[in-house]
Length: 98
Image: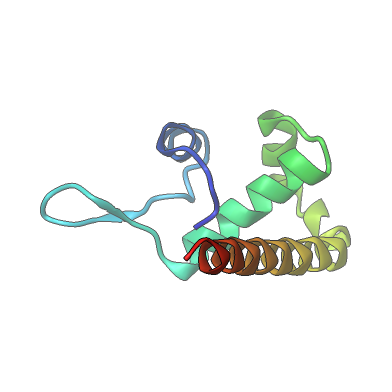
């Protein structure tokens, strides 16, 4: 969904105590909407703002992310639109091949 390797998610679970997905009886992780929003914020701060994970922890801990939230929302929306457009492009290319 967010195109993040499972190993990265597992690492982030160790680094951020807030990120604790539920597990099925077979051990498969189930992320809630709240977990996904948290992961999107980590992605935003690391990829779009250039923070290290330690920097993300400080921003989250001090609450200074409230000043960045409007930009976060815009970037998140644009990333969603990009993903949708790439999916549409892929579907069009598949249709042309038939």
